[in-house]
Amino acid sequence: MSNKYTIIFLPEAENDLAEIYNFILKSSSSTKIAKKVIDKINEGILYLEGNPRIYPQSVNLDVRKCVVDNYIALYEIDDANKKVIITYIFHGSRNYETHFN
Image (cartoon, rainbow, N blue to C red):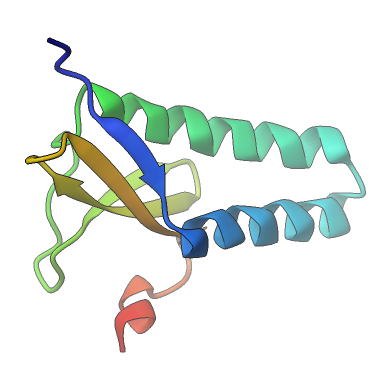
């Protein structure tokens, strides 16, 4: 029996990744740079498969924050089904609590 969790991206998180990619592509004019950033975010998120509790739970919200460079992925842990659910991904300069208001 595996101790790994399955990573699930909600549609909102998938849209966030696409928006991040498009923003970087537009600002850098480089698909290579945009892909590198997305790959790094995904690598950080995949680390949660074996260590979903590595990041602390938010004080105000029932989510955890996975920090990868300048980006934050909000996620929840479903222990019963061994899943990590990625809810939102965004640049760290944004106020993530606005997603929930």
